[in-house]
Image (cartoon, rainbow, N blue to C red; front, side, top):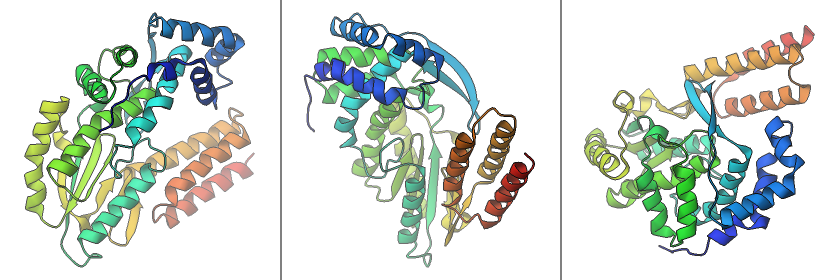
Length: 341
């Protein structure tokens, strides 16, 4: 395992802070807080650099609000200044830790994502079942209140195993401790930190338990095997590791072992032999969100461009499943709504 030092100067360099600003502001330039920061961009960046260099930097408070995705989630948004620091940290640390992540960890990684995760699990099922000709089972688990349960001391200790740089650990501690309960959903750093935190579990599953067919997306993970007993026997060591090493627990109502013919429910899709379907809740959410976007467009709240971008993203979701009837239904709604204008 490679050890890193001297990262602090790279993170807080003026060049990296300006790069962080450029990445952060994409798609946000019409927001008032972003415009206010940009109005005095150079003084703001140089002051932030000085505060970081002299270890005077203090993370600000969060603005919290709820979204429906599909269940209600509490989002915590940091101030612009702090989000630039998050991006600056991400710029330097992500390449370092990314190299050590397993190939079947799919959350918030370049070249991974939801669709790649679904395809990987589909492939695992086909391989285990020898193209659906042999028995096979799928263990599906969900970690209870993951972001709220991340232990601050544990995540900082995880950083310290790879980073021998007191100043960098100080800065990471500032970000971690800025949120009293676990990690906030909404920080760019939370996405990276979640992968670093759960990589400890990934390595345990792959290296210690020797599990071959395993995939994870944030706090959801799947194991595919021929024997149901094998999967049942994994549960106790998995629970013990999560509890003792990461202060996490499985959501008991979201642990299941099913025959693959019954469908593997993962990331909004149900993976079945020879086909993939959208989960029923996902179908309802897609229809509801499209109807909302069409209403917003008709009321002049969003532009034709924003509408087309939204519709394109939903078409991307649909194209990864067998959704011929649903696609026709959606297209009919879109056509009807646009002809009424």
